[in-house]
Structures are given as C-alpha cells and as structure tokens.
Image (cartoon, rainbow, N blue to C red; front, side):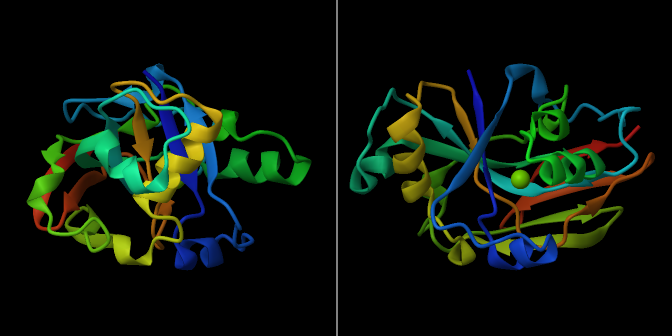
Length: 203
Ligand code: MG
C-alpha cells in the first residue's frame, strides 16, 4: 500500500504559502509507516517546532490501474474519508529553499492520520463536497471540492501515467486554506459534510 499526496490543489492555500500555481498536479508520497488509524493520538515529533495540520479528502483505490483515462477514473474508488497531511513546515521551508525533496517534512512516522471511510454514493456529486477541520471546537480549515484545481478524476489519471495504482492505495487530494501549527493538548476533529469521521488528540 502506498500513500500518494497532492500538493497545491486549492488556490487560496497556494496563496497562503506564496507558492506558484501549478500547471499539472504536484504529487509526493508517504510510506505506509505514516498512517495513523483508529483515532489514536498523534505525538509531536522532536525534530520540528512547526508541525502544521492540512485536512484533506482521502480516496481509497479499489482496483489496479495504469494509464487510466480521466473519463474512467471514477471507477477506481468507491470510498472516501478525511485525513491530515501533517507537515513539518520549518523543515519543508528549508528543503524548498535548497531545492531538495520534501520527504523529511512530509513522510515521517504517523504523519498521515486517517478517518473512517464512507461510500461515495452518499454524495450526489464529487465536485461539490464540503469538508472541514475543527481544533478544540473551532473551525480552522474549511474546503469544498468545487474549488479543486485538479479534480479527483484528473488526479487519478495523472498519477497513473507514472505510478501503477493498486488496491488499497490512498490518495490525499490536497488541503484548503487555513493550515497552521498544532500543539500538545489540541483536539482535532475532521468532517466530510456534517459527518465527523476523524477525531484525535495531539500529545
Ligand atoms: Mg497536503
């Protein structure tokens, strides 16, 4: 199983990080050791002093695919949820400045908390799904898939040109505006529409 994450997929988030608008999807990967399941607590790592939350919709791939056509991409996932793409922003800034890969900032252990999956048939359209993240009861990030630069289907088609998708692979589809640091004691709650699918504490 692999975790593929899309960067820079919501315009307002690109602006908040002063990044350039990409002309094709940007992706990177996290190893399976990044997964954090069952609402287990996230322990702040000691190598960073600026761990940021990035709430994202996560797709679970349900069939093997290579060079998937965009028009058929919707057949490659049946379930979705919300997850957090934890990012050591201080390290990422250093890596960006040096032109180095982001893995050190993105792929560390338990950097990918993930919620409970729900069937996609619960939603009328994939391009109008709201999601948000609350910290200690206050909404800090709020997004809607209508604002995606690259739709779920475009992302699946694009990734599969380069990397074969396999059953159980996960795609984190990008974060909306409002990223920021977490601290010990924070309670994170992530929702797809009004349904809470992920809740955990930072320790
Ligand atoms: Mg992200």
